[in-house]
Amino acid sequence: MCYLGIQADHFNPKILYILKQKYNTNSRLTYHAHDYVSIIYILSGSCTYTIQGKSYAVKKGDVIICNPGIFHGKNFTNTEEVSEFQVGFHNIHLEHLPKEYLIQEDACPVIQLTTYEQDFYNVYSEIIVEQEKNEPGVHLSLKILIMKLIVILLKETYPYIKKEEHNYFNFESYDRTTIVNTLLAYFNENYMNKISLDKISKNMYLSPVYISKIFKEETGETPINYLIKIRLEKAKELLEEDRLSIKEVAQNIGYNDAYYFSRLFKKYYGCPPTQYRNTFLSQNDT
Image (cartoon, rainbow, N blue to C red; front, top):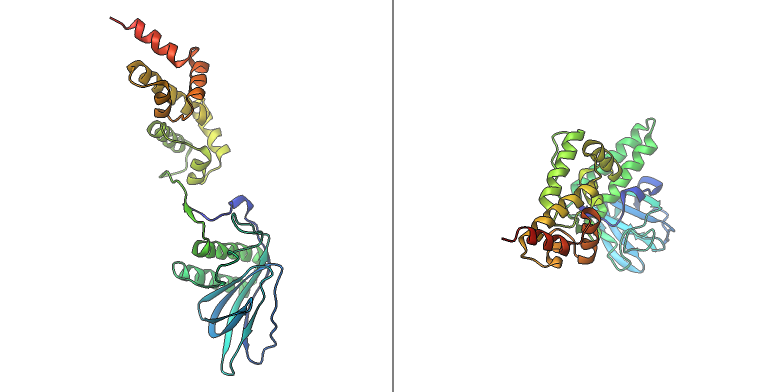
């Protein structure tokens, strides 16, 4: 799973316009800027775009991204013309970028799609079909498709993409028992690692609240309490072996803070780890 700098819950761009137009040397053109971000997709033909005083030769398949305040305009020779698909929107904020920016300030505004070229074209085609059908709900359908178009562009251009830690959960069905059993197995196999219910919920495409609810209903424990009990039981086994220091025991069960581990152990078992080890060893000393 890739992180694109924006949370799904906060992704709600406001679409200002969607249009398809043809331009040539006879078109009335101006050098202008917007207070919103715009996407220009070259459908056919070629021309020269002047963007912030710099010239770019564009052709079919190129995508131009203009952040707010970026001046841009078209220039033609007598024989040139170009057909464009344009989208304007605002209310978007990506991590590491100024609000309303879709690309970095110093990034090239002309994008040549490579990895997601066909995906981008397919979504564009869906948008045109929806506009032409103009059926009830068309505005919502178009917004959904434009959001998909933006995501594709982010996958192609966002400079801070990182692979999120992905723990694979394969379900034959999303029934309660399957979900809980999968989590139980995961906790038992990975208790020594850093575990985040938020990351797990994203990978399962379920909310943390829902996961916690059904887990407690099925097991009587919250996921966090269940994980703590697994870790502390493993800690008891390590303490009884008398091979590791308290700090090493803590690290072996997923806690980097030995003091926190000791407090947690005492809370659950009524004595600190050192006392538990000494008592166990004295009782089993032959």
